[in-house]
Length: 424
Image 1: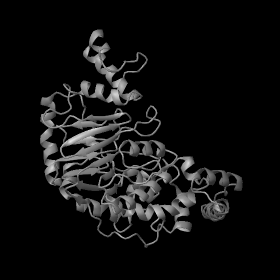
Image 2: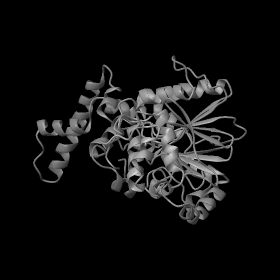
Image 3: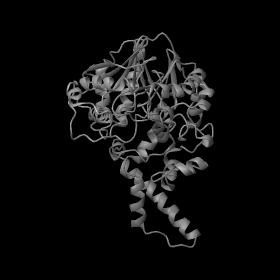
Image 4: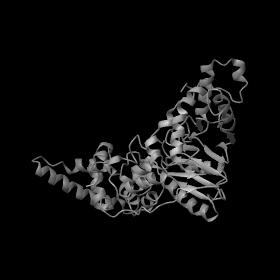
């Protein structure tokens, strides 16, 4: 039975119960020894003229398409027009939202189209992709499960229920207990196994369309000396190096190595670590300097000049820390983040720009990076090209109150501070 490892027993909740394990065993063969190949995947590129990085999507397909268009990567037919640009999606494109499947289909299409013209689409493994591969599906939405249904979904589920109910009765008999009623067992079973669940699990299996595709992706890549990953690096993980880390993730997800160390899913590991992204932006330059030695050691291990990460949701804008050596790009694409934000990072040489719906904004980096002296001006520029971004407006309102900016100063800004916005 799947999930024998202690780590998974601590991690698996709700739907990932005995019912799920039975489904895997009976219908998807995920517990079998057959596993996807873990062949080496390239992880480094140099001399790339333009990079566009996009953070967590979480099934927000329409917003994702808008971001791609804002960045000039696709046309209205959703065909690649980005030329030799490298697109990096830093993981967590599945779960929570309703259209993860459409997101994956588009990414798979863009992978092929970009490569034909000398570009590249890099799709990184995040913790939610790893969760779907191993069967932790608590964050899969009802709409997402429904998207996998077909004409035989109900009859498939009925067959699995019969197997499940037989097992429950045999277990009760062996323990000298009364077997659950068929009605009660059915009610519980269907709460754990919505229509589309079985097909979803097949699709994420070693031989499934999405499972096979995810298992061959990287967890981190290095382009022009910049490392892209889903979560944050720690010194011990950075010491492994990118190649070794990618190998460990793929081996665990392919079932070729036991997940006792929890490389893909432990909170202190790369796919889930928040680390440096939680360092407050409102720091004096001296405070940032005090932490920069640790950042420099991490980058030295990674043979990199800066790192770009997703996973930790920002306040609706791209955050730059430690003089631009650490960039957080998960601005919250899902609608639960005040309507969803259309934000991407554009890198050309040493120039970092945030792409918003109405234009681009230069991101402070280098010695005079984003800190308490530059944050307000940066957010004013962001608000000018993203006037519907309530999170940014709320941050500006908070900064105005915190610094006790006078009415005359506040009113001269290129945005209007709404009095009904909460202080975050």
